[in-house]
Image (tube, rainbow, N blue to C red; front, side):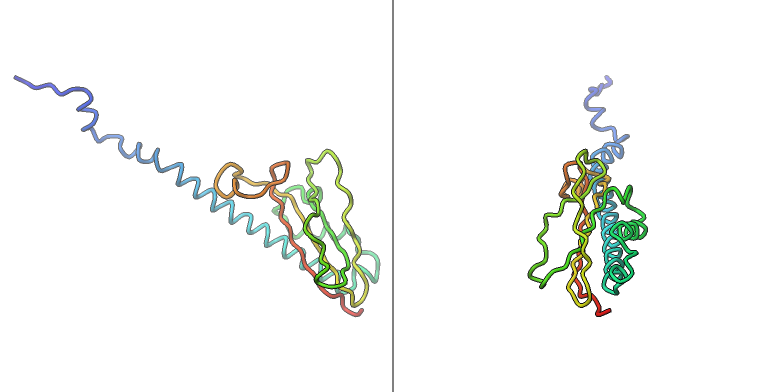
Length: 180
């Protein structure tokens, strides 16, 4: 007499396809980790480029080029920042540049500058542009709204975003103008 196995018993004992099931269980976590690492690295690159551009703009100001000849304007400094941060899309329309003079490091303007965003329907007010004169303390703050590739996954989900779902990179620097 031949004993017949039930269909469920044969299904449980059959090992074909087990790799596909394991992959289906592990793949979402693996790809979430990979995309989060990519997002973190990409935002670090963007932040480093913005910091470098702010240092270059500060050099232009503290050496007196923005004050003495009068040819360096806020718009030309914005263009300089955007030329050094080539990975940022629509940079000029998403950039806010604030340059002010301060009396001491205790009087640095508090965070609260509104970042420009190209998706804003109401134009943002112009940021302060006063590079100061010789031996004054100047403060430069740049804010750029940038896209997040994975807004609903990993790091992209945890980042603070503006009303349009963009991450704002803020870089600031205080320095003393040279006695030009």
